[in-house]
Image (cartoon, rainbow, N blue to C red; front, top):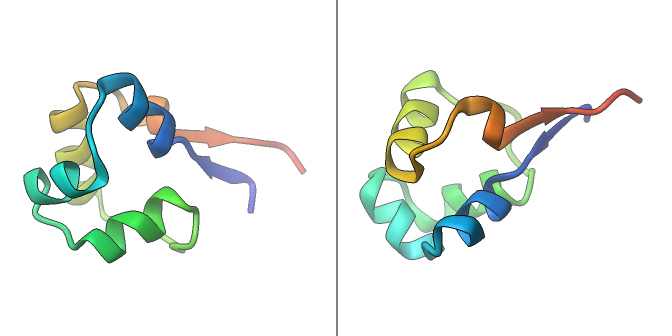
Length: 68
């Protein structure tokens, strides 16, 4: 896939655990872990908005396009 999820990097920069982020964005640990590891096929804007709010970042900080 050409879209790379950089959630792990943002979480490390903000010093927030997967469990804490999942709780704050009201998402299950499993789903958030799947997103972080690039195993999800898509993300709702509502979820992306919540993650950006908690991590104080832009969507472009979390998603990166890589040419094949």
